[in-house]
Length: 276
Ligand SMILES: [Fe+2]
Image 1 (cartoon, rainbow, N blue to C red):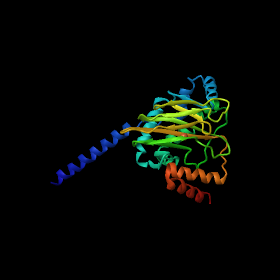
Image 2: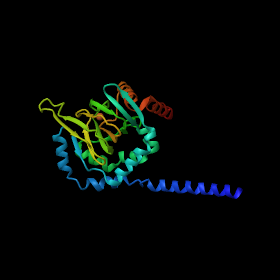
Image 3: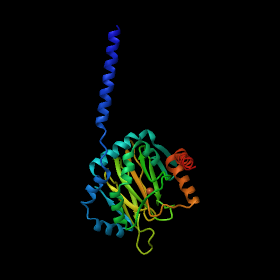
Image 4: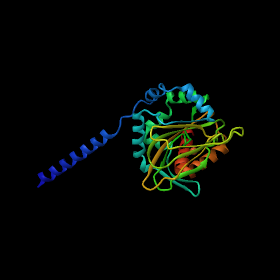
């Protein structure tokens, strides 16, 4: 009897071990972020893209931007973080899920590495003509994942307003797209001399959207039944200083519309303690 029971235990252990090995094998190895970005950006005509960016009032869309191994890594991370998604519902404006940089730091360090990639930042500086900096450590929106996983998930027309003393640029990267969602946008809305120019893209996995948050009016249209869309947002600034009352407004917005009070204010309290 006891031999039979032991045999069962050994069999169960070996099944568990082979499942773990299979799971490990399916996890794509994290690529070198700088090398992967450089492998793509060196193939682009960056001076021409810079002209396009300026002509579109600080907006650029590239359908094929990320190296395939980077897209695969991001898609894996996005699925692995599904249990960490914070859902929000702002009637008439927004419905969806988000994962903040604080959670990404704990569970998906490659995303943070990609955000800080000198190759990526250097290339975005060439496009924008601005010296770019990463957002401060207490900004939950520095890098974040957006999830559209339930029917009706969307975000209405808005700007990515800068609460910083300088400009705020948004980089959106397509991660997973089994959806009908579209990014609708309007160019030149802040320029009275040029008529507004509407546009719309679906930005598939691996694509890039880069813009000055205060200039591009945009929205994401509602997801349908059984659809899933995940995108990654990176925020870069020209001046990381923010006045305290603006920091308060920005934190409240992030807590209510994106990450929840726990994520935003707990992290702030923890950092306050670290500094004390
Ligand atoms: Fe936005």
